[in-house]
Length: 217
Image (cartoon, rainbow, N blue to C red; front, side):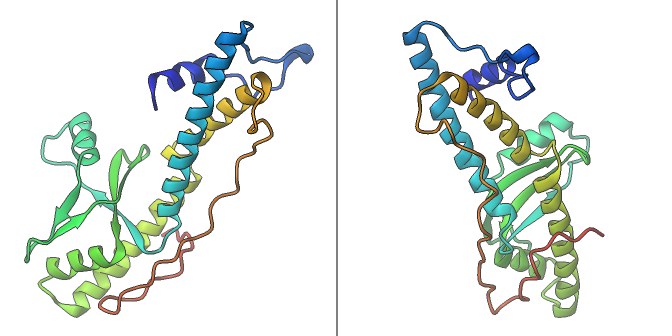
């Protein structure tokens, strides 16, 4: 989030609370020029945050993408660990050294662990090589990892501290400012219920995708 949006969220922290004695808790700049500039910046931030929310939810609702936990290195601090994983662009398989692209990064504040998003077919390839191409071991390991992935996806969609929900809280505050202070086509904009699930066909070389329903162990 850009510095401006951080400042604005702090300024309007109580924007969505019920007004006291009929007065709005949102401060709107009185000078027309200042209000115009602020509304322009808010509009840009709203569009940016909505794109990020849509992209994250598309990954979390897509059964063709798995969230894979990345372990902390020996004597690695939390800061170094999170920085390392956030900058990770891909992973290599153990046997063929095939490069698998990382599609996204997620943090679980309860576990204090990072997860990377990988295409399901790529992760099957990673597991397959990791057990020396043993079909039974690969099948069992992959199914277990799928269950872990569904659990983590459910957390990321539902927990208030997840990145997508933090973005939503910020967006609600920005939308409240826009409704109160700006003459904009977005004045009556409401948060969508969420994009439709995007299904990715499973490749024949690895097991079919399970139902994309959250499953808690």
